[in-house]
Image: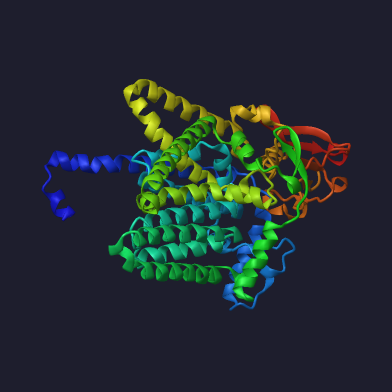
Length: 556
């Protein structure tokens, strides 16, 4: 019927009908394509981070596990228990590295960035579905102008694929449960995505709670409408089928679940990471803080420092709007309950069930933060463990932009255009000036990157070691040593694994005593207490993030 109606529209109406939904979608595609082009073009510049050194062999070992018919067990013999994460993305990287005649680390960074952009591609349709036409591009721009997120897109080998899986899963759950009785095809898609989340990181199990909650709201709507009550049993069957498919998918892509009882194997992995003991201290808002005793407000405090100020303002406005709506809803519900008794709850419950998409988004954005605070989980390295929450917060922030600011902007288009251009220009300039260390970007509330230096841990993953190494290469190309240089790159617990970073025939040194050159980083200042001489630095925002030292053996 709708197709026939569309065919009868005049040409001008047809053009208008196409243009209305297409422009926001084209804007989203353009922004994502531009970001992807930048990410791929600069993949070779990005620093190699701590976790990339152990995920690099993991992909090849996991591939060998499958190709050997489950007999090559090398992936389970890793002191850092990397096998407690799912290896599907690492396998993709290993296959690409084998097929492409490009530096393997460049391939890894390019594919990691691609995975991140794929994840952010779900933000657009999710925001448009729940909020409005221009919410999608707004949320995407907020994500990509957040330096902390943009920087991580290139070199977080587990957190970025997890972000992609969680973002698409959240969108799929919201989309599929728009119907009172989700289709079997939609349930199959959700089940596969739930399995991808679980098969990436044990914490992905939380997405199954989102799914069950959304299906429960569908059941609530059906139970309150007599004609739909027949859907209760099919809803239960679809929920069970989606969860079963999720676990089957996770088992198929996660070797750890294949070598024993999948439930107990999963539980071992889950409890290992929730109770992991990795105590060390770092600066958080200028206060020495321990990973073993984080304050409940640690994650909100990190977001307050790392998200751009406009992002935070929009987010605060959205939360204020949500609280206002919730207060009005509760007041109306209380009045109906007081005047009609239990029967008066039917309409509010139907309204609640009808708003299940927004409820799923709110829970998916806030529950991980709340759980970390309640469980007292060990969180370290900024908030990279819940990086996947930032795109969902951006969707929530886009609500206030579309509902509050967009009407005002239309009333003063020149002022609006100037404000948007100024924000984009300053954000892009900041990211460009920090390249390839965009993840150290801090907002004005924290004093900017320069003001936050020393009050926060910024380059906690030693990404600055790689550009420092490139500077040393250029230096020695101009003035080579008489012997093969011995270089120690100070990346904690990885000093003996840094050979893939070298683009020259150099020797890896693992102690200052045997090195000609030392490259120390923010977390690992290995040159302190030695007689090495500073010869160069990696400076960003007027602050030193990596330092190159020459030892007496190189100065002779």
